[in-house]
Length: 289
Image (cartoon, rainbow, N blue to C red; front, side):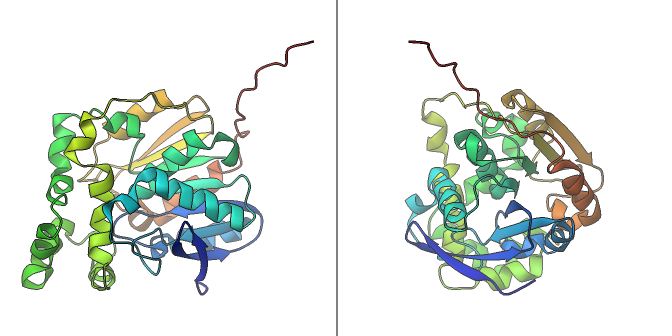
């Protein structure tokens, strides 16, 4: 990949990769990744005629790492993406997200219907499904509760040569790279603050607000070997999509689908992006005077 560039948005410097020409595609990673997650997708999309923009989201990679929990609310991060697209002259991108990046992509899609073409969510379904998780999903997401304790979580994850972190992660994703990235000053707290800002137990006590429908053509992708997220999270997402909805299950892939099944993911992306007519926000007819 080419050298990263930097853009300043909302008082945070975001590093990003920007390659290719054509219709823009924004790639959003999750925890504890960076734009490096998409190293197999970027060249395939560029060759397919797209302009690919892959940021290191705030708290990760080479981007700024505020230490306050409130700096990582989903609305704040969506605002980062909106501001970044405006500064880069991108009006209506395709948006592809994995893990936390998928959660941000969903929220971007229903909050900014005029600023998205197609939506692709990998591993993580619509936040409306996770508003009332099943007991099985709660059990699979136990680590989210463990990450809620500032200072304590950091210390336990680092102890004995990051033993607990290694046990949680296994040999999935870029497991060896994660330790180097999280050893950067402030990186571990910044990453855990994503969970503290958005998945704390107290968040479930807040009154549920109805979600605007997703109008964009949407593709959900889930791997059968995902240990953290159940299939129900993705299959249940269709009811929140008013535009065309498609679901693809990749057997044998784990949580890190872009790494576990890169060829299948690339084929799905190239076959989906730009093939459906983009949805447009419904307009009320003007009243005649």
